Amino acid sequence: EDQVTQSPEALRLQEGESSSLNCSYTVSGLRGLFWYRQDPGKGPEFLFTLYSAGEEKEKERLKATLTKKESFLHITAPKPEDSATYLCAVNDYKLSFGAGTTVTVRA
Amino acid sequence: NAGVTQTPKFQVLKTGQSMTLQCAQDMNHEYMSWYRQDPGMGLRLIHYSVGAGITDQGEVPNGYNVSRSTTEDFPLRLLSAAPSQTSVYFCASRLQGGTDTQYFGPGTRLTVL
Image (cartoon, rainbow over all chains, first blue to last red):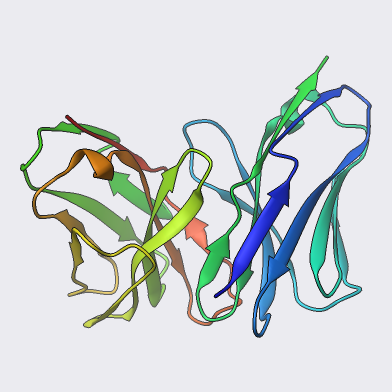
């Protein structure tokens, strides 16, 4: 059975303080790893899809990387508007989600 | 293009009542799914459909029914609501295959008393 574990559960950052979120996974056949952003009271919003180890994708202050066992979401010089819960999901045939990391960025 | 829409946004039920959560998408996506989100547990798949007339169970299907008579609509029915079904429910859709981007609706917050 697919398993996805995200750490830490919560992350409090000062504006400009870079950090990384971790997503470790166990899946029999990875077809894709997805990162989503979720704001309070809203549905998840797609950020990235990674398909193979070594792949990297960037969007503004976010950069996602993938190895054979985990993925990292790096937040560089975060701003308060980056505050959200970040969800990781893996796809074998169905999507399996981690519990998320809630990021709070203080000005 | 409205994307994925869900109604209602909030709902309070009494134990034993039934109701239907509505989900619609206007992107001509074949694949639709229902998730529930509970604190500390992430999103869990309830039911999914790979096309009109085809549905299957996900991880937590008990207490829920679905049907897919059209490509656009995928309603979720609670036959006899229980307090354990208090949760936030999200509908999602994607074009087809497993690595297509999945788009989520805004969610329905359900409380069962």
